[in-house]
Amino acid sequence: MRNLSLFLILALTACSAQSLPNPSSDLPEPYFTATASPTLTPNVVVPSTPLPSPTPFIYIVEAGDTFSELSEKFHVSQDDLRAANPDINPNAMTIGATLVIPGSSQAGAAGSTLTPVPVPVSQVICHPTADNGLWCFALIRNDTPDELENVSAQITLLDKNKAVLASQTAFTPLDIIPPGASLPAYVFFPGLSAAADVQVQLLSAIPSNNAQRLQAVLNNTVAQINWSGSTARVSGQVQLPAESPAATLVWVAAVAYDRDGRVIGVKRWEGGSVQPGGSMQFNFEVSSLGSAMDAVEFFVEAK
Image (tube, rainbow, N blue to C red):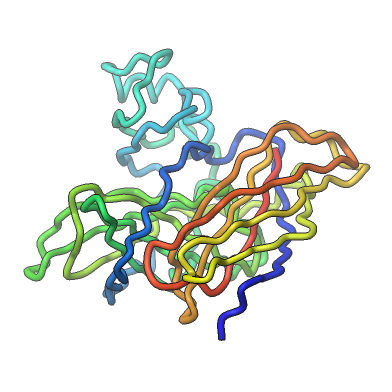
């Protein structure tokens, strides 16, 4: 029988620098459908040699994005970013606009920092929504001894003839994945309610042993799953050690799983500043996109 209340605590080191990916806190809310959402059984394709970070690709502008943050996020100079997007006004970017992320002009100097490492994608699953869309998740596991940052994957939907229906770059809800942990990279495909096959290709995963990360800790975490398993009210406390620098931004991610261990939902909550030795309460809701929710896993990051 599914536990209706889960107590999960996961401490995740975090970073005060802005050199990591900065996904928007204004993430789309999951849609829950009254009828059970069918699960795709994808043919997962993960190349043994991932695409190098300098390979150009398309990025969709999210709320809060700036040129300076994107240049740090993708390890490219602002001049190169402007040159690759001459029609984009850096001071007035529109949410949903497409940016070309060029190859880094500093690749030679950065050396091994920009070399992505192959990490396993343990599952790929898509869930249709009530508004004729498709949420797709690629669960990426960090089986290395280091934290991973700048993690992204290309998710491609194919029809029964193996023709490409759509393809987008998916990102994780937090900037880093700690050793031994798994986080889903996810993306929404509008106007597509089904696909015959799904492929995923790891684009970037960079090892990091940044000693400057803030040691944020989660305490008293609770996931109260409702009777139908469609939603969970999650709450808890983020705390910083007394010897830690102050945090100006706190993220808490909740990842929902069904009884078979499949990702069925994710939500990121964003909080403000926390002083050394201080704490912050969080309380938000995560919804299932598919079958009934059985467990919720928590992650935290502070900058």
